[in-house]
Structure formats: C-alpha cells, structure tokens
Image 1 (tube, rainbow, N blue to C red):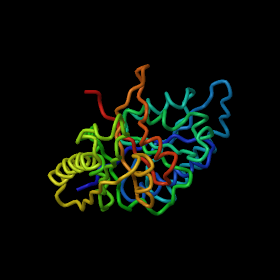
Image 2 (cartoon, one colour):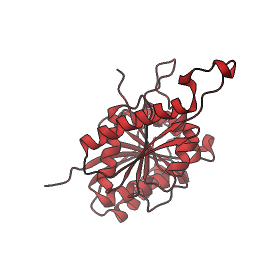
Image 3 (cartoon, rainbow, N blue to C red):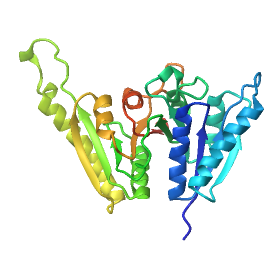
Image 4 (spheres, rainbow, N blue to C red):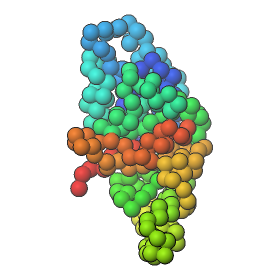
Length: 280
C-alpha cells in the first residue's frame, strides 16, 4: 500500500527564518512522501526576477538533497505574499512559514508577520522559528487544549503523533481567578480547587476522544498551573511540534491568533502548528 503524498506550500523571503522553515520541510520530506511548492511573492513594481529565481532554486536544492525524489514546484506570483500563500494553500495539506521570534517586526515574508498568514490560512499552518533546533521532528507532539478545542485540532495532533511514532502530550493550563470583592464572598466556583478540577475535566474529555480514535497511541496528559501562553511554551520546549486551534475572529471579519499562539511564537523554539476551525 502506497503512503499518501502530503502536499506542502512554503512561503519564503530572504531571511534566516525562511531557511529554518525550509529545513523543517526538508526533514519532513525525508520521512514520508511530500510534494512541495516553494512560493516567493514578487513586487510587480520591483520584480527582481534573477534574485527571486536564485532563492527559489536554492530552496529546491536544500529539499532535494535531504529528500531525493521529492517533487518541488517553484512559484513567484506578482502579488502580496499573504494573498499568494492563501491562494496556493487552498489545495494543500499544510502551509509553512518562518518567523523571527526575537525580532517580530523583521519577521517575515517581506514584512508580513507570520501570525497574519496563520490567521488567514485555510489549512493547518506551521510557523517555524529562526532558532528551531533541527533533529527534533520525531520528538513528542504537544496538543494544547481548552474547553473550546475543536475535534479537527485533536484529530490533526493525532495524525502528527501517528506519523512520527511519537507520544502525544496533551496539556491544559489553569490559573486562580483574580479576586473580586471581599474574600469571604468568593463563591466555590472561583476557588483554585474548582479551577483545577474544571481543567482536569476538559483534559479527560480530550483524552477519551484520543483513545477512542487512536487506542494504539501513547498519550500523556497534564494539567499545568500558570498563564496559558508562557506555561505551554515552557512545556513545549524540545518537542517535535506544538498544536493549537484557531477560531478567533477580528471585528473586521478576518481571523486572528489567540494569546496562546502569540505567546508560543514569541517564547518557544518549537515549531507551532495553528489548525483552523470552520465557523459553527
């Protein structure tokens, strides 16, 4: 039985973060069949065709050296990178971009922040930081959940853990609610015990779904105390991938990333996958 070919689009520019993203894709293509499209958008007023072609060819060389036989397509559309990547990604399984986590305003794709790309992408989007440590692709997968985590997000994390033969580590954070009014008037629902118990129930529900769908998968679940973003970022270090969902919408109708994803982009060297959730 032939393994299904994964379709990946990666957006690049001239930054080191793009080369980290290319290395991530190359490692992935070396492990299972992939068809890769490398996209570098071109400003129609300053096309720089020779330099663009050079960067695209160099990107293709990096991938085929690591994964001989991988089909690599090159594209240089004369349009904004956000529009180009969203258009190309519609027919793909995965979209990949790089990110300068310590220099967010210089981060990619010709000045466009990766969170905007992940917020607009119709498919799961992997954001690879410029200091991503190579060689951890098969390490454990972290799934960060909350009470609103959609089945599509859980299913994606299951697929990643299966693909890499990895442990799926499911985490949920909790924090004591800020005190309001007189301490003696605080309700039982506002106590630390109630908060932790609620987090445990959410985690148990997700783990039951995982074991029902993938009983062969090794699963670890943890309730972590602390602010969601920084706590998950710390837990995700030295892992293969951290997976979160995206369902937030701006007042203008476009999708934006939640605070956990934003914090992970800024604080973790682990690749982050943002999985879009269709509106209910």
